[in-house]
View: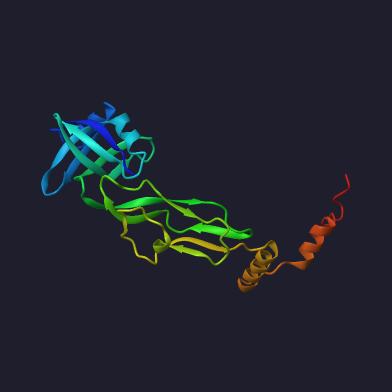
Length: 222
């Protein structure tokens, strides 16, 4: 379940790209906190502490502003496409006992039966849970499962207090039969035939024998 992480923020009065660049140069992060009908609050967050806190999905944050605490969840995190830094954070205000809808990571454990392929179709599952009791992840075991097995959203065990918000038939894990080398070669040959690709038998024979094209008359004379 979510552990509260305390972050001390400061109110922000400067806006625009220039102000945001100055904040980032100071190793801080511009952010906006909103929710429950209140006007958006523009704040600045400490860079390192915020990055560490947001490594965990659905981290519950206690934002301290001017001596007052406010619980919040990160709604949107904008990251630099090149540097390992956060450019901006949107925070949504939550209250104790309030239920929120979040995407929780799915962790697949175990080994499926031999000669199978495990495909994780969705690595998160959307659920509704109390803001202070959001599961860190859902564990899905595939131990010994055979080809043809499918694990749907409704098959995932949820902790007490959490209810499924996603479609019950959402496919989470699909286990299929592994294709043999012979079957793969046959499929490739069939695909080549359908595409009209034909091998030149004379070229194949020359490649196998290692023969080279005879030298033209006079090529070996000085």
